[in-house]
Length: 578
Image (cartoon, rainbow, N blue to C red; front, side):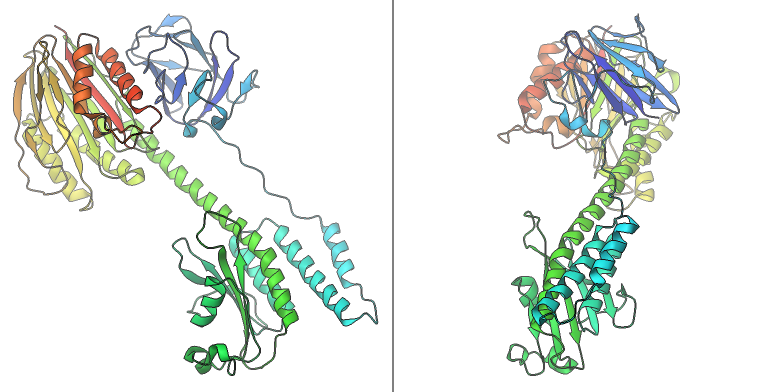
Protein backbone atom coordinates (compact mmCIF):
# COMPACT_ATOMS: atom_id res chain seq x y z
CA UNK A 1 0.00 0.00 0.00
CA UNK A 2 1.66 3.20 -1.15
CA UNK A 3 1.38 6.36 0.92
CA UNK A 4 1.75 10.03 0.11
CA UNK A 5 3.52 12.43 2.44
CA UNK A 6 2.98 16.16 2.41
CA UNK A 7 6.21 17.74 3.65
CA UNK A 8 5.99 21.20 5.21
CA UNK A 9 9.00 23.08 6.55
CA UNK A 10 8.94 26.67 7.87
CA UNK A 11 9.43 29.23 5.12
CA UNK A 12 9.10 26.71 2.27
CA UNK A 13 6.33 25.64 -0.05
CA UNK A 14 4.85 22.20 0.68
CA UNK A 15 6.13 19.25 -1.35
CA UNK A 16 4.19 16.00 -1.82
CA UNK A 17 5.97 12.71 -2.42
CA UNK A 18 4.64 9.22 -2.98
CA UNK A 19 6.49 6.53 -1.05
CA UNK A 20 7.02 3.23 -2.85
CA UNK A 21 9.35 1.50 -0.41
CA UNK A 22 8.05 -0.47 2.54
CA UNK A 23 10.66 1.07 4.83
CA UNK A 24 12.13 4.56 4.72
CA UNK A 25 14.59 6.35 6.99
CA UNK A 26 13.91 10.05 7.61
CA UNK A 27 16.72 12.37 8.64
CA UNK A 28 19.15 15.12 7.76
CA UNK A 29 21.74 12.70 6.35
CA UNK A 30 22.04 12.57 2.58
CA UNK A 31 21.89 8.78 2.92
CA UNK A 32 18.40 8.91 4.39
CA UNK A 33 15.56 7.90 2.07
CA UNK A 34 13.88 11.21 2.92
CA UNK A 35 16.54 13.83 3.58
CA UNK A 36 14.92 16.71 5.46
CA UNK A 37 16.64 20.09 5.28
CA UNK A 38 15.93 21.04 8.89
CA UNK A 39 18.63 21.89 11.48
CA UNK A 40 16.43 20.55 14.28
CA UNK A 41 16.14 17.13 12.65
CA UNK A 42 18.74 14.49 13.55
CA UNK A 43 20.84 13.00 10.79
CA UNK A 44 19.10 9.64 11.30
CA UNK A 45 15.84 10.68 12.90
CA UNK A 46 12.95 8.26 12.38
CA UNK A 47 11.76 5.31 10.35
CA UNK A 48 8.48 4.63 8.55
CA UNK A 49 7.78 0.97 7.91
CA UNK A 50 4.85 -0.88 6.32
CA UNK A 51 3.83 -4.19 7.84
CA UNK A 52 0.75 -5.82 6.37
CA UNK A 53 -1.60 -2.96 5.58
CA UNK A 54 -0.43 -0.72 8.43
CA UNK A 55 2.32 1.90 8.53
CA UNK A 56 4.40 2.26 11.69
CA UNK A 57 6.73 5.02 12.81
CA UNK A 58 9.77 4.51 15.06
CA UNK A 59 12.02 7.18 16.51
CA UNK A 60 15.66 6.21 15.90
CA UNK A 61 17.12 7.88 18.97
CA UNK A 62 16.77 11.43 17.63
CA UNK A 63 17.90 14.35 19.78
CA UNK A 64 14.60 16.26 19.62
CA UNK A 65 12.22 13.32 19.34
CA UNK A 66 9.49 12.36 16.87
CA UNK A 67 5.94 13.57 17.46
CA UNK A 68 2.67 12.03 16.27
CA UNK A 69 -0.23 14.51 16.30
CA UNK A 70 1.64 16.60 18.85
CA UNK A 71 2.56 13.75 21.22
CA UNK A 72 6.15 12.49 21.49
CA UNK A 73 6.26 8.80 20.59
CA UNK A 74 7.94 6.02 22.53
CA UNK A 75 8.83 2.82 20.75
CA UNK A 76 6.89 1.98 17.57
CA UNK A 77 3.46 3.52 16.89
CA UNK A 78 0.91 2.90 14.11
CA UNK A 79 0.06 5.82 11.80
CA UNK A 80 -2.81 6.35 9.39
CA UNK A 81 -4.01 8.79 6.73
CA UNK A 82 -4.55 12.22 8.25
CA UNK A 83 -1.88 11.80 10.95
CA UNK A 84 0.82 14.45 11.26
CA UNK A 85 4.40 13.51 12.11
CA UNK A 86 6.85 16.13 13.33
CA UNK A 87 10.61 15.73 12.97
CA UNK A 88 12.42 18.85 14.11
CA UNK A 89 10.32 21.72 12.75
CA UNK A 90 9.20 19.76 9.71
CA UNK A 91 5.66 18.34 9.46
CA UNK A 92 5.01 15.15 7.48
CA UNK A 93 1.30 14.64 6.84
CA UNK A 94 0.10 11.25 5.63
CA UNK A 95 -2.41 11.71 2.84
CA UNK A 96 -4.98 9.21 1.55
CA UNK A 97 -3.63 7.77 -1.68
CA UNK A 98 -6.53 9.05 -3.79
CA UNK A 99 -6.80 12.48 -2.12
CA UNK A 100 -6.35 15.51 -4.42
CA UNK A 101 -3.06 17.19 -3.70
CA UNK A 102 -2.65 20.84 -2.72
CA UNK A 103 0.96 21.89 -3.19
CA UNK A 104 3.68 20.85 -5.60
CA UNK A 105 4.07 17.15 -6.34
CA UNK A 106 7.70 16.90 -7.33
CA UNK A 107 9.10 13.95 -9.32
CA UNK A 108 12.16 12.42 -7.73
CA UNK A 109 14.60 13.50 -10.42
CA UNK A 110 13.63 17.16 -9.94
CA UNK A 111 14.56 17.22 -6.26
CA UNK A 112 17.94 18.48 -5.19
CA UNK A 113 19.94 19.12 -2.06
CA UNK A 114 18.56 22.63 -1.76
CA UNK A 115 14.95 21.46 -1.59
CA UNK A 116 12.91 20.74 1.51
CA UNK A 117 13.27 17.04 0.90
CA UNK A 118 15.62 14.89 -1.07
CA UNK A 119 14.67 11.27 -1.61
CA UNK A 120 16.28 8.33 -3.36
CA UNK A 121 14.98 7.57 -6.87
CA UNK A 122 13.43 4.24 -5.85
CA UNK A 123 11.40 5.95 -3.09
CA UNK A 124 8.94 7.71 -5.40
CA UNK A 125 6.85 6.74 -8.37
CA UNK A 126 7.88 7.63 -11.87
CA UNK A 127 5.61 8.26 -14.81
CA UNK A 128 5.85 6.53 -18.17
CA UNK A 129 4.48 7.78 -21.46
CA UNK A 130 1.47 6.06 -22.90
CA UNK A 131 1.74 3.95 -26.04
CA UNK A 132 1.02 5.73 -29.30
CA UNK A 133 -2.42 4.73 -30.56
CA UNK A 134 -2.63 3.02 -33.97
CA UNK A 135 -3.74 5.01 -36.99
CA UNK A 136 -7.47 5.29 -37.49
CA UNK A 137 -8.93 2.80 -40.03
CA UNK A 138 -10.23 5.61 -42.27
CA UNK A 139 -6.72 7.09 -42.57
CA UNK A 140 -5.31 3.68 -43.50
CA UNK A 141 -8.04 3.30 -46.15
CA UNK A 142 -7.22 6.69 -47.67
CA UNK A 143 -3.54 5.86 -47.87
CA UNK A 144 -4.29 2.47 -49.44
CA UNK A 145 -6.53 4.15 -52.01
CA UNK A 146 -3.89 6.75 -52.84
CA UNK A 147 -1.32 4.02 -53.26
CA UNK A 148 -3.51 2.05 -55.67
CA UNK A 149 -4.12 4.90 -58.13
CA UNK A 150 -2.53 4.20 -61.54
CA UNK A 151 -1.89 6.63 -64.40
CA UNK A 152 -1.20 5.03 -67.84
CA UNK A 153 1.78 6.13 -69.89
CA UNK A 154 4.03 7.31 -67.07
CA UNK A 155 7.80 7.25 -67.75
CA UNK A 156 9.74 4.30 -66.17
CA UNK A 157 11.52 6.53 -63.62
CA UNK A 158 8.15 7.86 -62.43
CA UNK A 159 6.83 4.32 -62.10
CA UNK A 160 9.92 3.40 -60.04
CA UNK A 161 9.37 6.41 -57.79
CA UNK A 162 5.72 5.50 -57.42
CA UNK A 163 6.68 1.93 -56.50
CA UNK A 164 9.22 3.19 -53.96
CA UNK A 165 6.65 5.56 -52.43
CA UNK A 166 4.11 2.75 -52.19
CA UNK A 167 6.55 0.50 -50.35
CA UNK A 168 7.59 3.31 -48.02
CA UNK A 169 3.93 4.01 -47.26
CA UNK A 170 3.45 0.37 -46.34
CA UNK A 171 6.57 0.41 -44.17
CA UNK A 172 5.52 3.62 -42.46
CA UNK A 173 2.03 2.33 -41.71
CA UNK A 174 3.34 -0.96 -40.40
CA UNK A 175 5.95 0.60 -38.17
CA UNK A 176 3.70 3.29 -36.67
CA UNK A 177 1.78 0.64 -34.74
CA UNK A 178 2.90 -0.16 -31.16
CA UNK A 179 4.28 -3.65 -31.83
CA UNK A 180 6.65 -5.93 -29.99
CA UNK A 181 10.12 -6.50 -31.42
CA UNK A 182 9.19 -9.91 -32.87
CA UNK A 183 6.12 -8.44 -34.55
CA UNK A 184 8.18 -5.57 -35.99
CA UNK A 185 10.74 -7.98 -37.43
CA UNK A 186 8.03 -10.18 -38.95
CA UNK A 187 6.41 -7.18 -40.64
CA UNK A 188 9.73 -5.96 -42.06
CA UNK A 189 10.56 -9.38 -43.53
CA UNK A 190 7.05 -9.66 -44.97
CA UNK A 191 7.32 -6.21 -46.60
CA UNK A 192 10.71 -7.07 -48.11
CA UNK A 193 9.25 -10.23 -49.67
CA UNK A 194 6.51 -8.08 -51.23
CA UNK A 195 8.93 -5.40 -52.47
CA UNK A 196 11.72 -7.42 -54.11
CA UNK A 197 11.81 -10.74 -56.04
CA UNK A 198 13.62 -12.64 -53.28
CA UNK A 199 13.06 -16.29 -52.46
CA UNK A 200 14.53 -15.98 -48.94
CA UNK A 201 14.90 -13.11 -46.47
CA UNK A 202 16.92 -13.26 -43.26
CA UNK A 203 16.97 -10.49 -40.66
CA UNK A 204 19.99 -10.52 -38.34
CA UNK A 205 20.55 -8.46 -35.18
CA UNK A 206 23.63 -7.74 -33.11
CA UNK A 207 23.45 -8.98 -29.51
CA UNK A 208 24.52 -7.13 -26.36
CA UNK A 209 27.97 -8.78 -26.50
CA UNK A 210 28.47 -8.12 -30.21
CA UNK A 211 27.37 -11.58 -31.36
CA UNK A 212 25.16 -11.97 -34.44
CA UNK A 213 22.03 -14.08 -34.75
CA UNK A 214 19.26 -14.50 -37.28
CA UNK A 215 15.96 -13.55 -35.62
CA UNK A 216 13.36 -13.92 -38.39
CA UNK A 217 13.41 -15.81 -41.68
CA UNK A 218 11.00 -15.39 -44.59
CA UNK A 219 10.46 -17.70 -47.56
CA UNK A 220 8.32 -16.84 -50.56
CA UNK A 221 4.86 -18.26 -50.16
CA UNK A 222 5.23 -18.65 -46.37
CA UNK A 223 4.64 -16.44 -43.35
CA UNK A 224 7.83 -15.01 -41.78
CA UNK A 225 8.76 -17.02 -38.71
CA UNK A 226 11.25 -17.24 -35.88
CA UNK A 227 14.38 -19.05 -36.98
CA UNK A 228 14.60 -22.54 -35.50
CA UNK A 229 17.55 -23.86 -37.45
CA UNK A 230 21.08 -22.56 -38.10
CA UNK A 231 21.24 -20.05 -40.96
CA UNK A 232 24.56 -19.94 -42.80
CA UNK A 233 25.54 -16.65 -44.41
CA UNK A 234 28.85 -16.01 -46.14
CA UNK A 235 31.49 -14.47 -43.89
CA UNK A 236 32.58 -12.17 -46.72
CA UNK A 237 29.10 -10.65 -46.94
CA UNK A 238 28.93 -10.23 -43.17
CA UNK A 239 32.30 -8.45 -43.22
CA UNK A 240 31.24 -6.11 -46.01
CA UNK A 241 27.88 -5.18 -44.48
CA UNK A 242 28.54 -5.38 -40.74
CA UNK A 243 32.14 -4.24 -40.44
CA UNK A 244 32.21 -1.73 -43.30
CA UNK A 245 28.55 -0.69 -43.27
CA UNK A 246 28.18 -1.16 -47.04
CA UNK A 247 25.34 -2.65 -49.05
CA UNK A 248 26.03 -5.70 -51.22
CA UNK A 249 24.44 -6.57 -54.59
CA UNK A 250 25.63 -9.43 -56.77
CA UNK A 251 23.86 -10.46 -59.94
CA UNK A 252 25.54 -13.89 -59.92
CA UNK A 253 27.56 -14.89 -56.86
CA UNK A 254 28.97 -17.92 -58.73
CA UNK A 255 30.92 -15.65 -61.11
CA UNK A 256 31.39 -12.53 -58.95
CA UNK A 257 35.12 -11.82 -58.46
CA UNK A 258 34.50 -10.72 -54.84
CA UNK A 259 33.39 -14.23 -53.88
CA UNK A 260 35.55 -16.38 -56.17
CA UNK A 261 37.65 -17.59 -53.23
CA UNK A 262 34.66 -18.14 -50.94
CA UNK A 263 33.79 -21.83 -50.94
CA UNK A 264 30.70 -21.26 -48.78
CA UNK A 265 29.02 -19.33 -51.58
CA UNK A 266 30.28 -21.48 -54.43
CA UNK A 267 29.24 -24.73 -52.80
CA UNK A 268 25.80 -23.41 -51.83
CA UNK A 269 25.03 -22.58 -55.46
CA UNK A 270 23.43 -19.24 -54.54
CA UNK A 271 23.26 -16.80 -57.44
CA UNK A 272 21.51 -13.47 -56.73
CA UNK A 273 22.23 -11.81 -53.35
CA UNK A 274 21.45 -8.47 -51.70
CA UNK A 275 22.41 -7.43 -48.17
CA UNK A 276 22.01 -4.04 -46.49
CA UNK A 277 22.94 -2.78 -43.00
CA UNK A 278 20.47 -1.58 -40.40
CA UNK A 279 22.10 1.59 -39.11
CA UNK A 280 21.19 2.77 -35.61
CA UNK A 281 21.55 6.23 -34.11
CA UNK A 282 22.85 5.48 -30.60
CA UNK A 283 26.25 7.10 -30.19
CA UNK A 284 27.25 5.04 -27.17
CA UNK A 285 27.50 1.84 -29.25
CA UNK A 286 30.86 0.85 -30.76
CA UNK A 287 29.31 0.27 -34.21
CA UNK A 288 26.31 2.02 -35.78
CA UNK A 289 25.27 -1.27 -37.43
CA UNK A 290 22.58 -2.88 -35.28
CA UNK A 291 21.44 -5.45 -37.82
CA UNK A 292 21.34 -6.63 -41.41
CA UNK A 293 18.72 -7.62 -43.98
CA UNK A 294 19.93 -10.41 -46.27
CA UNK A 295 17.94 -11.59 -49.32
CA UNK A 296 18.82 -14.07 -52.03
CA UNK A 297 17.47 -16.00 -54.97
CA UNK A 298 19.31 -19.33 -55.09
CA UNK A 299 18.26 -20.34 -58.60
CA UNK A 300 18.11 -17.22 -60.78
CA UNK A 301 21.05 -15.05 -61.78
CA UNK A 302 20.29 -11.37 -62.28
CA UNK A 303 17.16 -11.56 -60.10
CA UNK A 304 17.95 -8.21 -58.40
CA UNK A 305 18.62 -4.78 -59.88
CA UNK A 306 20.14 -1.54 -58.62
CA UNK A 307 16.56 -0.32 -58.19
CA UNK A 308 15.85 -3.29 -55.89
CA UNK A 309 18.96 -2.46 -53.86
CA UNK A 310 17.87 1.18 -53.56
CA UNK A 311 14.43 0.07 -52.42
CA UNK A 312 15.83 -2.43 -49.90
CA UNK A 313 18.26 0.17 -48.54
CA UNK A 314 15.43 2.66 -48.07
CA UNK A 315 13.28 0.07 -46.29
CA UNK A 316 16.23 -0.77 -44.05
CA UNK A 317 16.79 2.89 -43.18
CA UNK A 318 13.20 3.34 -42.02
CA UNK A 319 13.03 -0.07 -40.35
CA UNK A 320 16.26 0.49 -38.42
CA UNK A 321 14.65 3.34 -36.47
CA UNK A 322 11.71 1.17 -35.44
CA UNK A 323 13.96 -1.79 -34.60
CA UNK A 324 16.20 0.38 -32.45
CA UNK A 325 13.19 1.82 -30.64
CA UNK A 326 11.76 -1.67 -30.14
CA UNK A 327 15.10 -2.86 -28.75
CA UNK A 328 15.16 0.09 -26.37
CA UNK A 329 11.59 -0.69 -25.29
CA UNK A 330 12.47 -4.34 -24.66
CA UNK A 331 15.49 -3.26 -22.64
CA UNK A 332 13.29 -0.87 -20.68
CA UNK A 333 10.78 -3.63 -19.95
CA UNK A 334 13.59 -5.96 -18.87
CA UNK A 335 14.97 -3.24 -16.61
CA UNK A 336 11.49 -2.77 -15.11
CA UNK A 337 11.26 -6.52 -14.49
CA UNK A 338 14.63 -6.51 -12.76
CA UNK A 339 13.66 -3.41 -10.79
CA UNK A 340 10.50 -5.17 -9.65
CA UNK A 341 12.53 -8.20 -8.54
CA UNK A 342 14.95 -5.93 -6.68
CA UNK A 343 12.04 -4.18 -4.97
CA UNK A 344 10.75 -7.55 -3.79
CA UNK A 345 14.22 -8.50 -2.56
CA UNK A 346 14.59 -5.13 -0.85
CA UNK A 347 11.27 -5.58 0.95
CA UNK A 348 12.40 -9.04 2.07
CA UNK A 349 15.64 -7.64 3.46
CA UNK A 350 13.96 -4.78 5.30
CA UNK A 351 11.63 -7.25 6.96
CA UNK A 352 14.68 -9.12 8.25
CA UNK A 353 16.27 -6.04 9.85
CA UNK A 354 15.17 -5.13 13.39
CA UNK A 355 12.64 -2.30 13.71
CA UNK A 356 14.30 -0.86 16.82
CA UNK A 357 16.92 -2.01 19.33
CA UNK A 358 15.64 -3.65 22.49
CA UNK A 359 15.75 -1.84 25.81
CA UNK A 360 18.40 -3.41 28.06
CA UNK A 361 18.97 -2.08 31.57
CA UNK A 362 22.37 -0.48 31.90
CA UNK A 363 22.96 -0.39 28.14
CA UNK A 364 22.25 1.92 25.21
CA UNK A 365 21.97 0.29 21.77
CA UNK A 366 21.38 1.40 18.20
CA UNK A 367 21.77 0.00 14.70
CA UNK A 368 21.35 1.30 11.16
CA UNK A 369 22.06 0.09 7.62
CA UNK A 370 22.28 2.21 4.47
CA UNK A 371 22.27 -0.01 1.37
CA UNK A 372 24.43 1.21 -1.50
CA UNK A 373 22.15 -0.42 -4.07
CA UNK A 374 18.44 -1.12 -3.97
CA UNK A 375 19.33 -4.44 -2.40
CA UNK A 376 22.37 -4.57 -0.18
CA UNK A 377 24.38 -7.35 1.41
CA UNK A 378 24.71 -6.17 5.03
CA UNK A 379 22.82 -7.81 7.89
CA UNK A 380 22.51 -6.99 11.58
CA UNK A 381 20.26 -8.14 14.40
CA UNK A 382 19.50 -7.93 18.12
CA UNK A 383 17.91 -11.13 19.45
CA UNK A 384 16.81 -11.77 23.02
CA UNK A 385 18.14 -15.04 24.41
CA UNK A 386 17.55 -17.14 27.52
CA UNK A 387 18.01 -15.71 31.04
CA UNK A 388 18.01 -12.10 29.88
CA UNK A 389 20.93 -12.46 27.46
CA UNK A 390 21.08 -10.64 24.14
CA UNK A 391 22.52 -12.04 20.89
CA UNK A 392 24.27 -9.47 18.66
CA UNK A 393 25.00 -10.17 15.00
CA UNK A 394 26.46 -8.19 12.12
CA UNK A 395 27.39 -9.75 8.80
CA UNK A 396 28.04 -9.11 5.14
CA UNK A 397 26.79 -11.60 2.55
CA UNK A 398 28.52 -11.90 -0.80
CA UNK A 399 26.82 -10.52 -3.87
CA UNK A 400 24.05 -8.00 -4.47
CA UNK A 401 20.44 -8.09 -5.59
CA UNK A 402 18.19 -11.12 -5.28
CA UNK A 403 21.11 -13.51 -4.60
CA UNK A 404 22.17 -11.38 -1.63
CA UNK A 405 18.59 -11.20 -0.36
CA UNK A 406 18.19 -14.97 -0.43
CA UNK A 407 21.55 -15.54 1.27
CA UNK A 408 20.71 -12.93 3.89
CA UNK A 409 17.39 -14.69 4.49
CA UNK A 410 19.22 -17.97 5.07
CA UNK A 411 21.74 -16.28 7.38
CA UNK A 412 18.96 -14.53 9.31
CA UNK A 413 17.07 -17.81 9.77
CA UNK A 414 20.16 -19.71 10.93
CA UNK A 415 21.18 -17.02 13.44
CA UNK A 416 17.64 -16.78 14.82
CA UNK A 417 17.51 -20.57 15.14
CA UNK A 418 20.52 -20.41 17.48
CA UNK A 419 19.24 -17.54 19.65
CA UNK A 420 17.61 -19.74 22.31
CA UNK A 421 20.42 -22.27 22.34
CA UNK A 422 22.53 -22.81 25.46
CA UNK A 423 25.53 -23.57 23.27
CA UNK A 424 28.58 -21.33 23.25
CA UNK A 425 28.82 -18.66 20.55
CA UNK A 426 31.63 -20.68 18.89
CA UNK A 427 29.31 -23.69 18.70
CA UNK A 428 26.51 -21.47 17.39
CA UNK A 429 28.81 -20.16 14.63
CA UNK A 430 29.80 -23.71 13.69
CA UNK A 431 26.10 -24.67 13.41
CA UNK A 432 25.37 -21.59 11.26
CA UNK A 433 28.33 -22.47 9.04
CA UNK A 434 27.12 -26.05 8.54
CA UNK A 435 23.61 -24.84 7.69
CA UNK A 436 24.86 -22.44 5.02
CA UNK A 437 27.23 -25.05 3.55
CA UNK A 438 24.34 -27.50 3.27
CA UNK A 439 21.70 -25.11 1.89
CA UNK A 440 23.51 -22.59 -0.33
CA UNK A 441 25.67 -22.74 -3.46
CA UNK A 442 29.43 -23.40 -2.98
CA UNK A 443 30.33 -19.87 -4.09
CA UNK A 444 27.97 -18.22 -1.58
CA UNK A 445 29.38 -17.20 1.78
CA UNK A 446 29.13 -14.49 4.42
CA UNK A 447 31.28 -12.81 7.01
CA UNK A 448 29.62 -12.73 10.43
CA UNK A 449 30.43 -11.37 13.89
CA UNK A 450 28.33 -12.99 16.61
CA UNK A 451 28.23 -12.27 20.34
CA UNK A 452 26.15 -12.99 23.42
CA UNK A 453 25.79 -10.14 25.92
CA UNK A 454 24.99 -10.98 29.54
CA UNK A 455 23.83 -7.58 30.86
CA UNK A 456 23.66 -8.78 34.46
CA UNK A 457 27.24 -10.05 34.58
CA UNK A 458 28.34 -7.43 31.99
CA UNK A 459 30.10 -10.15 30.01
CA UNK A 460 30.42 -10.33 26.24
CA UNK A 461 31.31 -13.65 24.58
CA UNK A 462 32.04 -13.36 20.87
CA UNK A 463 33.40 -15.10 17.80
CA UNK A 464 34.31 -13.58 14.45
CA UNK A 465 33.83 -15.40 11.11
CA UNK A 466 36.03 -13.29 8.86
CA UNK A 467 34.24 -9.98 9.52
CA UNK A 468 35.84 -6.57 10.09
CA UNK A 469 36.99 -6.70 13.73
CA UNK A 470 34.64 -4.48 15.78
CA UNK A 471 36.31 -1.87 17.95
CA UNK A 472 35.80 -1.81 21.69
CA UNK A 473 36.69 1.57 23.14
CA UNK A 474 37.16 1.55 26.85
CA UNK A 475 36.06 4.44 29.04
CA UNK A 476 39.68 5.61 29.27
CA UNK A 477 39.99 5.88 25.45
CA UNK A 478 42.02 2.71 24.88
CA UNK A 479 40.95 0.51 21.97
CA UNK A 480 40.67 -3.25 21.47
CA UNK A 481 39.76 -5.01 18.20
CA UNK A 482 37.69 -8.17 18.53
CA UNK A 483 39.22 -10.59 16.02
CA UNK A 484 39.07 -14.07 17.57
CA UNK A 485 37.12 -16.57 15.45
CA UNK A 486 37.69 -18.22 12.09
CA UNK A 487 36.95 -18.07 8.35
CA UNK A 488 33.67 -16.79 6.79
CA UNK A 489 30.62 -19.05 7.08
CA UNK A 490 29.47 -21.09 4.11
CA UNK A 491 32.93 -22.14 2.84
CA UNK A 492 34.15 -25.23 4.73
CA UNK A 493 31.55 -27.33 6.52
CA UNK A 494 33.78 -28.63 9.34
CA UNK A 495 35.33 -25.29 10.32
CA UNK A 496 36.02 -24.90 14.05
CA UNK A 497 35.64 -21.42 15.56
CA UNK A 498 37.28 -19.90 18.62
CA UNK A 499 35.62 -17.49 21.02
CA UNK A 500 36.65 -14.94 23.62
CA UNK A 501 34.90 -13.54 26.70
CA UNK A 502 35.27 -9.89 27.78
CA UNK A 503 33.91 -7.79 30.61
CA UNK A 504 32.28 -4.45 29.79
CA UNK A 505 32.76 -1.56 32.20
CA UNK A 506 30.67 1.63 32.54
CA UNK A 507 31.49 3.99 29.66
CA UNK A 508 32.80 1.23 27.36
CA UNK A 509 31.55 1.48 23.77
CA UNK A 510 31.39 -1.39 21.28
CA UNK A 511 31.15 -0.36 17.61
CA UNK A 512 30.38 -3.00 14.97
CA UNK A 513 30.75 -1.83 11.37
CA UNK A 514 30.74 -3.18 7.82
CA UNK A 515 33.59 -2.60 5.37
CA UNK A 516 31.36 -0.05 3.64
CA UNK A 517 32.27 2.28 6.52
CA UNK A 518 36.01 1.76 6.72
CA UNK A 519 36.61 1.31 2.96
CA UNK A 520 34.45 4.21 1.71
CA UNK A 521 36.64 6.31 -0.59
CA UNK A 522 36.46 10.02 -1.38
CA UNK A 523 36.94 11.68 -4.77
CA UNK A 524 40.72 11.24 -4.48
CA UNK A 525 40.48 7.49 -3.85
CA UNK A 526 41.46 7.84 -0.18
CA UNK A 527 39.64 5.49 2.19
CA UNK A 528 37.93 6.64 5.37
CA UNK A 529 39.80 3.94 7.27
CA UNK A 530 39.54 2.45 10.72
CA UNK A 531 41.83 5.11 12.22
CA UNK A 532 39.36 7.90 11.41
CA UNK A 533 36.53 5.81 12.80
CA UNK A 534 38.47 5.31 16.05
CA UNK A 535 39.03 9.06 16.39
CA UNK A 536 35.34 9.86 15.88
CA UNK A 537 34.38 7.29 18.51
CA UNK A 538 37.02 8.57 20.93
CA UNK A 539 35.83 12.18 20.66
CA UNK A 540 32.13 11.26 20.92
CA UNK A 541 32.20 8.22 23.20
CA UNK A 542 30.45 10.03 26.05
CA UNK A 543 27.37 10.72 23.92
CA UNK A 544 24.33 8.46 23.63
CA UNK A 545 24.57 5.57 21.17
CA UNK A 546 22.25 7.26 18.64
CA UNK A 547 24.22 10.52 18.85
CA UNK A 548 27.49 8.62 18.35
CA UNK A 549 25.94 6.92 15.32
CA UNK A 550 25.07 10.36 13.91
CA UNK A 551 28.60 11.68 14.54
CA UNK A 552 30.09 8.73 12.64
CA UNK A 553 27.67 9.23 9.73
CA UNK A 554 28.38 12.98 9.75
CA UNK A 555 32.16 12.48 9.67
CA UNK A 556 31.79 9.93 6.87
CA UNK A 557 29.60 12.24 4.79
CA UNK A 558 32.05 15.11 5.24
CA UNK A 559 34.94 12.86 4.22
CA UNK A 560 33.23 11.47 1.11
CA UNK A 561 32.16 14.86 -0.22
CA UNK A 562 30.56 14.31 -3.62
CA UNK A 563 31.81 10.72 -3.96
CA UNK A 564 29.14 8.03 -3.97
CA UNK A 565 29.48 5.07 -1.58
CA UNK A 566 30.57 1.87 -3.31
CA UNK A 567 29.22 -0.51 -0.65
CA UNK A 568 26.54 -0.83 2.02
CA UNK A 569 27.22 1.00 5.27
CA UNK A 570 26.06 -0.61 8.51
CA UNK A 571 26.64 0.28 12.15
CA UNK A 572 25.69 -1.43 15.40
CA UNK A 573 26.64 0.32 18.66
CA UNK A 574 26.46 -1.03 22.21
CA UNK A 575 27.34 1.27 25.13
CA UNK A 576 27.37 0.36 28.79
CA UNK A 577 25.82 3.25 30.69
CA UNK A 578 25.75 1.91 34.25
